Picture 1 (spheres, helix red, strand yellow):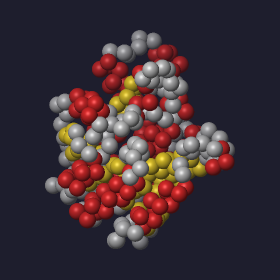
Picture 2 (tube, one colour; picture 1 turned 45 degrees about the vertical axis):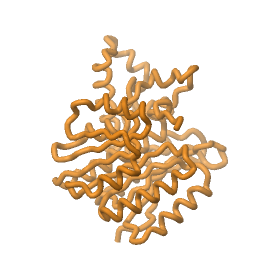
Picture 3 (cartoon, helix red, strand yellow; picture 1 turned 90 degrees about the horizontal axis):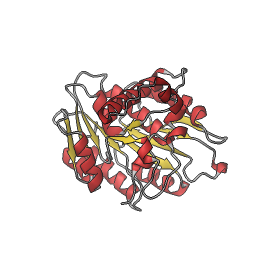
Picture 4 (cartoon, helix red, strand yellow; picture 1 turned 90 degrees about the vertical axis):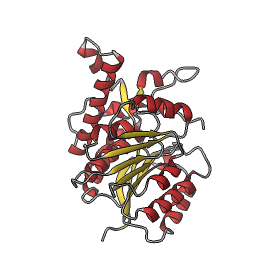
Amino acid sequence: MNYRHQYHAGNFADVMKHAVLVQLLRGMQAKEKGFLYLDTHAGRGGYDLEAAASGLTQPRAPEWPDGIGRLWTRRDLPAEMADYLEQVRTFDAYARTAADTTTTNPSDDEQRLGPRFYPGSPRLAQGLLRPQDRAMLFEAQPDEAAALAQEFIGAKRVSVQALDGYTGVKAALPPPERRALVLIDPPFEAQEEWSRIIGAITAGLARMPAATFAVWYPLTTRAKLTDFYRQLMAIKTLPPCYTVELTIAGEEAGFKMRGSAVLVLNPPWGSEGPMRALTRYLAPVLAQAEGATGGLHWLVPDL
């Protein structure tokens, strides 16, 4: 597996995915009872955006300026986006202190127009966990898993497993808390990735029908998405579910990846409104060509 998320950290897809994740975590916490947060493809806890731009052998054009960079100084954020951005700012400040990179000149940060450090889903989740909540982070790639484990040494209520996350879904559900939010966010390098997602959802729901699943996926070739939705709808007793979608350009723009989506099964009550609000806001802000859209679409309505 060659994928390294650090080169894409903070891009438009991360912004949408992580804003959705924050709202799902908030929705789970509407109830006092604790829950398990399970991350199947956790990656690293956080990313140094300056290091990411250097690439493995030569400099790379950073992707974060067209993602989190477009939000950093805005003052018109709806509550859903302000919540997400506050989590990013908190992590950036923490990571700067830990790395001893805090600038003595505040204007340096203003000129940067973005964070120096960006949180991955593990750090976002950890920052929002209550005492009664718990996180299990799975990462199969050895060096990424080692880096993740190093970041969370001594962390309370967080465990790191250097294992295949799809196997982790079967092993961890149902948890003692009897409530769970599962994030499936694979790199989509393997041809069988789509079918493995369906397998994990099917197995997870069989073990815990009320578990909440969030699956991130790119909006690329229409054929693969059609087949994915066909397999999804074929799952027996499929629970209420919707897709949250964001595109930064229309199909005519010719982008290899013109958007991304998050499929949410068993969504927390009341989450529909915040999801619609954040995608409605992000579409024009993150647009890179004409035809950018954002929205929420129910696949199985919550009746």
